Amino acid sequence: MVLDPASGPLESQIHRAIRERILAGRLAAGDRLPSSRALARALGVARSTIVLAYDRLRAEGFLDARAGSATRVAALPAPPRHGRPSPPPAPAPEPPDIVPDALRPGLPDLTSFPHAVWARCLGARARAGRLVDLGHGGRAAGAPELRATILSHIRATRGVVATAGQVVIVPSIRVAVDAIARVALATAADPVAWVEEPGYIPIHTILKEAGARLVPLPCDAEGMDVAHAPGPSPRLICVTPSHQYPTGADMTLRRRLAILAHAHASGAVVLEDDYDSEFQYDTRPVAALQGIDRTGSVAYLGTFSKILAPGLRVAYAVLPPRLVAPVTDFLSGRGIAVPIHLQLALADFIADGHLRAHIRRMNSLYADRMAGAVAALHRHCGGVLVPGPGTGGLQLAARFIDPTLDDRAIARRLWRQGFGVRPLSDYYLGASRPGLLLGIASATPEAMDRAARGIRACVEEVLF
Picture (spheres, rainbow, N blue to C red):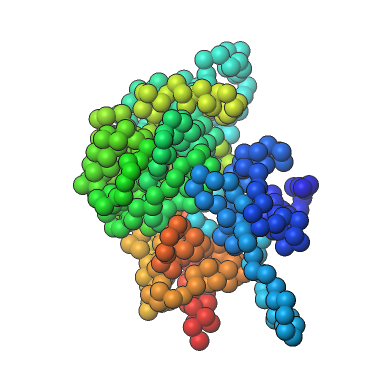
């Protein structure tokens, strides 16, 4: 497989190459694909690129993946062998290889990135580099300046209780999840991981590759419900309590305490992905689950991808003391690190108050755009779908009233119109409820009005 950066996104090139091999019979049903890590190493790309390509192929039915087993080629329907040959099917438009960025969930408004301030911080650190910062010694967990600055920030804004020694700097949340899962599951006889239903499927993929056996637990308006969780006890509990992805629900205190009780009783690690917690539009952000943990069960995960830009590739984990050494050793042994000058520039950016100022500005902008998105959907899509309350975050979940609608087909139609919405069915491991997930960060009133009209038209085309 030869990749050409000039030929479009690498994820799409990998997706097409594997799909063509399957359709041509060069990859047969049951054939085992390389792990995402091995293929990323062989192709010289980020592992997340392979994960996204595999996720698309699974969603399209080309690949199978089960907990604790390798990713394999799915059994495709065989062509008919008897009787009169079937007429060729009418040509159907294929879904586009590139999902548009407009209304795509998970993307911040990059036009509002504080370029000038960030350039000054980055330039200053690049010009004044110290010899001690250029070596490896003692910095496997990240630059001490950034670890201390991040802790100060999340202690004040998220109620996190920890020491700087518990903070580890990583390139992404996915890297942190992979490292923690492999350490936590290494000695588990039955590597059960409780995950949210619906939930963030790329994280589920990483957990499965780490050997986890996923047990989905339902999420409602109060968050994940562990009251009727099946046995056996989990080794991992993965939650987005402050802003559930994709529904946007805030977990109630009753549910939070129940999760902590289960974790303490079973010795499980709680992976708290504090997704989009900085952006709340009608109340103050709910404090982190980690802050009320008194048994050292919670690993708190945060990222600057949604606050600033995904291209920065800086995230962090606040680990229970027992996990600091094994997780740091895991990362160090694989050469996983964030460039030191980037870490130090970000430490300055936070310490000088630029991060808080940026969050304040963006919270006001995103609140207006979220309100506009909810209003546009009510205005143009009444009787078709029901949007969520839109009280926080960078995405808005909207449920179709008709439970028989094919949200994947509708999403593909909207892609062709330039809108990168996602079908809610993609976020379920089991039976799903149809709907759409819309990113609101760049949803200007004009764009959102056009999108709402497009959604209504697509539904009417499907129904009538």
